[in-house]
Image 1 (cartoon, rainbow, N blue to C red):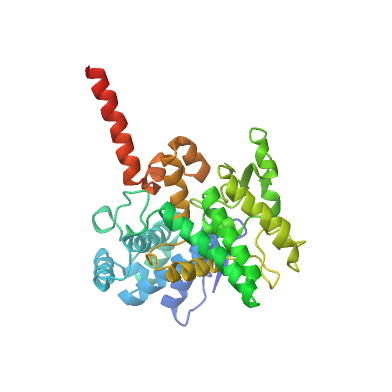
Image 2 (image 1 turned 90 degrees about the horizontal axis):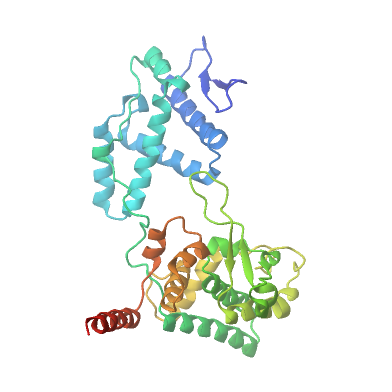
Length: 367
């Protein structure tokens, strides 16, 4: 039905001339999706999951509108958005992502480079148009679009989580139950996420060779710095790497203890992954999130708290302790200082201390 020319590295789909299609509308729509998939994967180097999610949005919109892309209108998008918003179960960032997928698909099928306007005019007597405009889509105005309920954990909450995680190890050992190794590992994972300000995915992808000596901190031995090799991707880029300098000696001790006393007990201890499972695999982000939720609920903490809140806490607590915000921005890998500021939720005591310093300085200057 369709082929990709050898001189077409971006995956432009060319329908074969002279071939009668049994269902031409479906065939052209499928070819559009395949061409867009190749353009995103081959030309923009996007990840398969990202592409799959976008294709799914386009298919869902097509089913809702009950129209093919070459007959879509801005009104169709307005109606779909109205229904999604009325349902009330989707975040604003999700709505914006849906609109972004439709916009980019329309950019692709309206581009003369890919010939879809010409093909649609020839076969259907009409052509696709861009249906996403400034006046009917959500603008991206903030760096962080997560739930407003997502906040840094307090120092007391962090300590309660770490203590509870340690207690589960001792409890499993005392009762002779399975799971003591997994509980030991997970307790260390949580301390590592907080101790170096990591995302769950970054923590999951760590390897034993990612820790390095820092000549400026010889007391930390070979754990003076952590090389994060799988930082968050942006706009089709490879994972962003960064080096995080170790700031919490107690977190270093926790990782060192895990590597010395627990990790060698795993059957796959010769593998590079830092966090192993009993089935010889790598601990996955979902497993980290599930264990965190289990402990959080047992402690009666807010259900909006996730492992990512430990990363927020790292930012907040270090700034409260006097660390330069620019330094913390580099530590957590934020491109913009505004993002780091959004992560920060300093305590009332900290704010009052800063207020007192400012007032004392002003009053002294006036005397």
